[in-house]
Length: 461
Image (cartoon, rainbow, N blue to C red; front, side, top):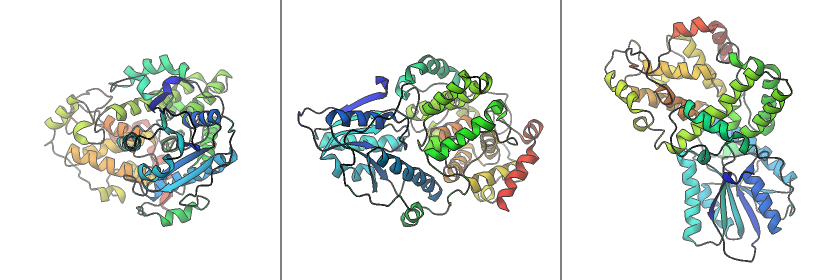
């Protein structure tokens, strides 16, 4: 592993060893291509100690509902099964992990963490570290950035202005971070007998027990876990990838759907990149398709993580975009809106635009929406809201409520892009001012929208 992934948060001074090593899994919910887990195994082997994976299941995670929990639990069930085969104990505790992990720290020799990029994720980790330091626990603690190929702190130390500014930095560094080879063999196996709070063998039962929002039901179309994610990846590279440059067309269904699995860390962008690199080097996929997909998988994704990591209050209207964008929105705040719709109108598919109604059906019934339609959808909500702030709040609410891959770096960055972030001023027009505009005529001119609409209407039958 490239040492620049590693952040030492606390050193210990004792010579004697304790009882076990903890890997606190939170963002990177997988065994394969997980640098944080692998470094914990190496450390445990060096100390000749057993290792446990601790996962804190938060029943009131911000804006999460049954759909999100179901997808995550499907993945965690698989993680536990694989971990046990590797000789690693898996401990699931219900509650805020900053509290539920505390009883385990006393006898831990070291604590390994994966990295969180959003405000809430960073706060969880900071609270645990603050507790360790306050209690003066003699505990080795380190955090490892394993969900990005180039770690967020290495790629840049500031908010990047756009893809064109971060792209050369990522390209220059990427070869240095192709740094995962295999999961280490665990020397001290199955030596821990801690009880989990919930039995992951029955995820349906857990969902019923959890005090969570059950309004939005689990997706019937997408299921969580590494195996399911890699299955979708292989279907994508077998049937679709060489057409990926055409993936903006909603009627063709050429997107990979891997954002759902990347969101929960169930698959690794590095593993996907390594497999794609091998295929392109063997001539099995074409270079144009490879470049187009890597642009999304690495450049755009890492730009998004740069944004949420460094941009304070990326999730608030007042602080999510550029000054020129706020100026132009202020200038056009009082412009006349021909259509005005409520959240209920969107959720019940009652706008005058059949493409938007179809996109909302995809979102509500499946937990996903085609990438190009997400941009068009957000732009229409801007056009059909009383104010730009109301539009931002409506977009964010629906995004976080229905999308399986909502509430993450890509989501918040995609929303901010619709309000000028990582973009440039365009020709001025009503309501949008100098924000980029998208319209129904352009959508119908570029794509066979009737095909997309008919496909989405099938979800209601």
